[in-house]
Image (cartoon, rainbow, N blue to C red; front, side, top):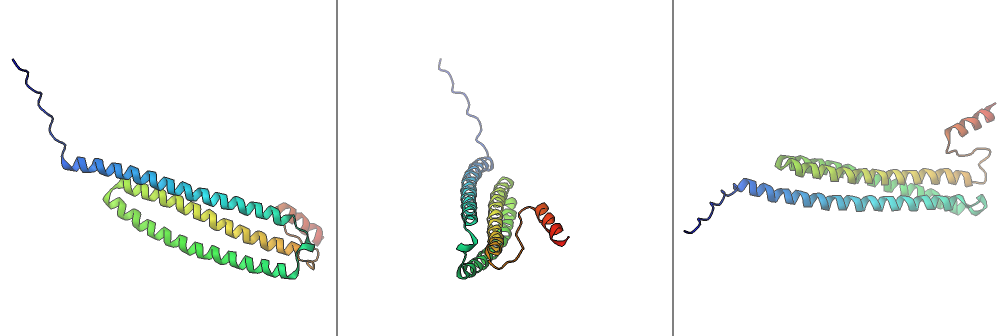
Length: 174
């Protein structure tokens, strides 16, 4: 007697099969988005570290190293940096709006895809916010350092510590 083959299980409905393929696509999108956000985050971090090194190098200069032409160039550089930061802020606002629309559309199709899109967009936005803050910090540093390097600045100073500034003002004003 021959053994009969066991009956095969029923096929999965097409919706379940499509869902399974879609879940794989969402997982791949998450990996790609995370890699993209990690790379951009790393670039922003390296750039911020370069800005910190530049600050350290500029602090080493004495007021004698800062001629009037250098002070004028520093002023133009400050204006350029602030213009770049303003332009980046406009681009960031556009990114926020576009990603909000994309996330909303993704949530209508699939909640997991929407969550991935929101997570990646949030990480990119946070990294770009840090870049803009770094630009503005550089501009503020250059402005204060330029003031410190001006030869005819009088008894004024720039301060990093608010308590040191308060102490200086109390001593100056009596």
